[in-house]
Image (cartoon, rainbow over all chains, first blue to last red; front, top):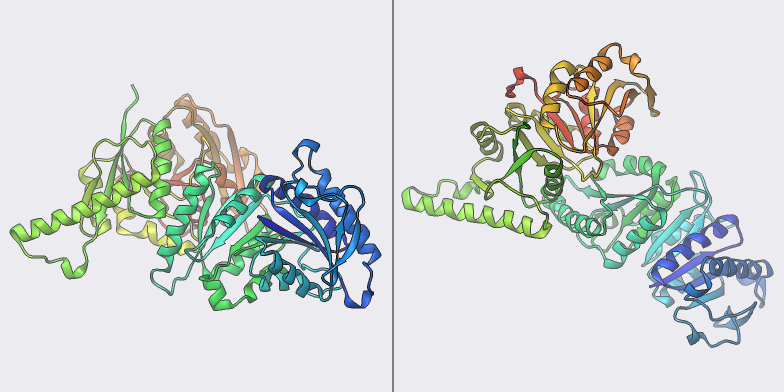
Length: 289
Length: 276
């Protein structure tokens, strides 16, 4: 599993490091901690961003006990060296010494484009990004960046709302294709937060047969999680009731949305709904692809 | 001596039945309940009048075999230890008619089926207005989700005749390891819920407590809960099931039972055809 954690210098980014570390500890994922600085900032790494990324790395590694730490690569402070137009934190140690990679990188350019480019290059499974608390979900100085990432990424995206605990994870499904990795990701999130799991089937009452396809997949998912003793709650929601349901569910916890290629939501609403969900949700949002 | 009750578990090859089957397999561990599985094969219209005599018997045999295979697939998939009285019964015809006939002729004490919790209250309204539900001569357990709790909520208020409903509910649920909460529901137009002392329900909850005491039972909690059906329903998800009188008209209680994510047990009065 590969995870890209998109970070800037603000408190919502600091807040997601511990959550990312917990997920990494359970999945032993390869991690890239990514910061982006504008092209106008010169040929050297931005001092503030560099300092913050070092702190985030230290904070990330501090979540592991000495014996359990699967990460390494750079011992001590290391230094940012130029690489492919950006900067990579490097040290003297050989990377292969450790089983899993923890890269700290700075890319140069437009933040949205560079985060998406890094995810593509890494062929990552998940992008994790933080955002401001409250009814809006923003990065400072980058209008609607979390929304754009969630909309445009070809990979799963976890948008973590600052200072919002996750008691419930409501996973919305409107298609009969769900990847094993997304099921496992939800399992990890439920375990990490000790949260209640809800599987919400979206039914298109206009299309005969759609409901049955979703129900069959929900039956498989129920069995998968029941075998893991998670016992999810099951609910069917009509497409026209989704917005109201999401507004209510986001007050209680995280919303996850399976948005595969066959997703009705993807077909009917393009990716606008995803953006709206990210922007208006009062909780963290996970887009599963 | 504890009476052994007999329940009909309606099964189809779908998610709702998967949940109902799993739930029922846990329920029989707590209750003196023997289950008969039943499945209805609904014939296609074009094949409905498939001849007479040998031709018809062959056609019916084919449908029954298809139904048996469907139930066996469900049982094989779920792999839950649910002891049944006998082989699953397969009926041919309209679903409501066939199940109603079996429930009437078979003298069952309980009808169980799965029905998924939906965002539209009208779905539940349609369900309990159906001929099957209105005419079923025994209590009905609608399984919406798997809940592992061992506490049952006895829901009073909003027109529930607790003096009639509670004794019959207890006779059905007199099992081992089950606890009871008494809840008096009161509609209130507010997103927040308010829990109040039992005295706020007048004498109703005290009488209900006395009815439990008659069976040597004591409720864990007795309280009045006020709120919208939606907000109170969220509180009810901690219960193994929520038992109440069969709603006869549209009301906040009907909406509460519709929104409740836990299984709901609908008790009928003697007038509504339920056997005493």
